[in-house]
Structure formats: C-alpha cells, structure tokens
Image (cartoon, rainbow, N blue to C red):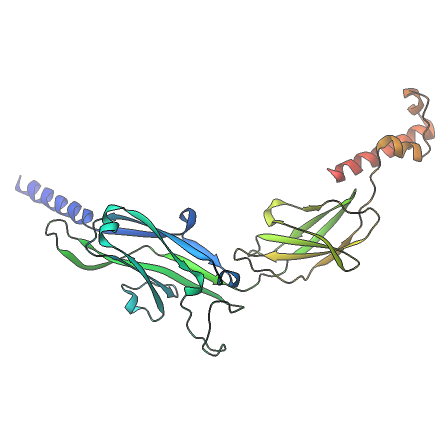
Length: 299
C-alpha cells in the first residue's frame, strides 16, 4: 500500500509539473512556419506574426528578430538582433492568442565579407535566414513562484531571398488556330513561369501561370505569323530569372471538315454513297483524319 501511495504521489507531482509550464508558438499567415521575402518587399511590406500560448507565464513575452538559424534565451544573447514590442504578461495569460507586425526593412542584416560590411535589405544575390524569436518564464504551479528556467517560443523562420532562379526551358511548341501551346519545364525553385510573346522583336503579349498547371496556351494571335517566345522563371519570393531558352511558333488556320473536304476536290452532291469508294471516298477519309487531328490540337 505504501508503495502504491508513493507511486501515486510521484505521478501527481509529474503531472502537476507538466501543467505548470508555458508554451508559445509563433506562426505566419495561415499557420505557416516559414515565409520568404524579396528585395521588392523591403520598401513597404509588413510581416504579420500570430502568437498562441498555453500555461501560465510569470513575465511578458519578449520578442525579437535575429539573423541565423538559432533563437537564444534572450535578445541580448544574440549577436545580431532587433527587438520588437513585447506582449504583456496579462495579455499572454488571458488572451491566449494575438498578432504583432514588423517591416521587412527591419531585418537585422550583419555585415559580410565582400559587401563592404554594409549588407542591408534590398541587396541582391543573397539568400539569408532569420528567425522570429520569443521567450518568457512560467509560473510554478504549487509555489506560484516565477521559474528560473527560460521558455523559448517555437520560432518562425523567415528567408530573405534575392537570388533569381535558374531559367526555365521551352520543351515544345504546338501550332493551333490563332494560338500557340507552349510546354515549359523549370528548376525545383521555380513555381511560376512567365511566357513573353514577341513579333519581330516587339512584345505582343505575356502570360504567367503556375509551373504545375500544365502547358501555357496563348490566344488571339495571327495565323501564318511567326512569333518569338521567351520563358522566365519566378520563385516563391518573386525573383525572376533571365531567359536562356527561346523558341518560335507559327499559328495555323484549322478549317472545318466540310470546307477542307471541298478544297481537296470533294463534291457537294452525291449523298452518303459518294464516299463509298474510289478517290473521292479516300480524299474524304484523309481530310477527316486531318480535321480530327486539327480539332485535337485546338482543344
């Protein structure tokens, strides 16, 4: 019996200890743990972070940005950081959730060799990681004292990306009626493709779509005119590649079956028996095959 009581006491103590802790999560829009930003975001974009907490904290939630991949216990312990406005203890314990914001331009870049020690938001050809950090302390369940142990928030990861992706490749061009269908493939860091259509070097139109959507179909072109095609890749941060793959395409007129049959020498009269055999029937079947093929290309 004594053994059972001691065991029960240990279990209750362990459970109480677990309940006395505090946990805080920091997440971006839609619950994402990561977000990517580009030089174009430095001017005016604000990043919104949602915090959620469980347990009881005995002090405010300190918040800061740091360069690198690790959040230390406090902002002062970070080599490169920028402090943000803290969440008050009362808000942390009663609201249980809330948001805070910061400008992309506030990211704490450190100097780096090769850039004169003045790297800042807006610099090109850089891929650099930052963390959104937070820390507080828990109220101990039985004593009500403030824990001596720092509880770090589950951080958010932010990547500043100003490196353009590798150019995509134009794999095939299909000729349609007043249109072209272009198949494009890209590197793993490309999630969108921008296809630019030119005529004699002057831009006619452009179309942007997801790489995983399928071939890009460009409408409202002129038949029997040769167009030049350029493909550009766009990554998650909005960086655009150069173009290394170009191609040409010429839309063609796709005629209706009966019109094509007449142009091939078919006769208007004769009914169904007119296709019974001979050259007329063969011509009509050949035209039918061409027409069906053209219709498949158009759809």
